[in-house]
Length: 394
Image 1 (cartoon, helix red, strand yellow):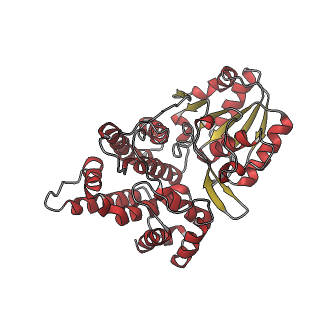
Image 2 (cartoon, rainbow, N blue to C red):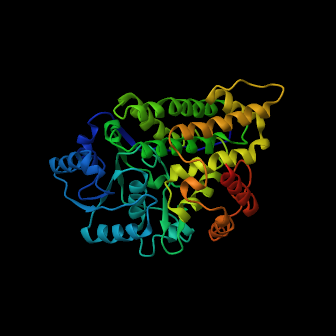
Image 3 (cartoon, rainbow, N blue to C red):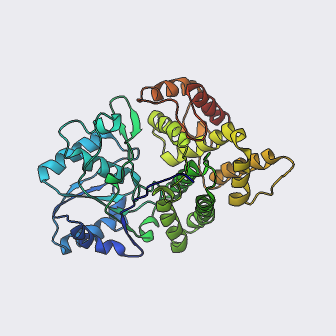
């Protein structure tokens, strides 16, 4: 296990009806005027908006609103939010939604106090050292941004989908997690969320670091929980126990508690960012296409790790005479699981085209230090194209 520093200061308020405490939590963490950030009408249909705004009113906290955040959140909404936060002189950001809303709020938070372009933080021109505090009321179990030290924004000038440098400065002050708020989600969004959280775990699980038995087992337990809970939530959208397991698993998948002390990969995420930049597919859907292809490509780098994944997550029988067969069976089981959730697993299903593969690699190269990437196996332009071709043939 490598040396590490782990700091996760977010307070979590978990359970049925906990959103009624939102106003008190804003007060607890020093907020006096809030910018409420959310997406479309779903938070009004499921009652989350009414509950949160009533709680703010009960706490005597005024608020301004920024609505219309899209999936794969855009820079335009961040710029709009920064301007609104300054004009309204808010001192707290409250994200009501899922990862896209939370990431938008995070970017507004560190952009509002900066005189330049918030994108400077993404290019590495300046370092994130301060931010307006962010609170979260989560309505989608997926991205894990409610507990993470990162955010991803697509800049519309150049269609650049990049993550900001990771920093504990932007971890939310609190996150309210009520599984009931996820019961009205469409099945597709629930499934995309399950894939996203599994990918967050796999990006940590496939590691070259030796002697990481504890975090290996944490990763495997979370993956098995998602494999068990996701079909139940899809079969019965009101299954509170399944929704609760998914909501907490999504947070644990990405707050890095199962990734400390080990080298991490993140190649699948980097490749998927180009898919969703090109085709505006849901992040989880893109990952369902990319991750099994990445696994196929790098499997022989450490066959026994993939065999362990197959046995401990999907219950495959270990073939000691030919561990690669077990490893490949595990990858096939993962792809089949994604299909069982109704997820795409081919280029055609997300509208991607094989002829765009060179352009995607070239687009990735526009990012500072864009290549190579990946902590498990280094991925350059040729390797990225090869992985995408595997995905195109799946």
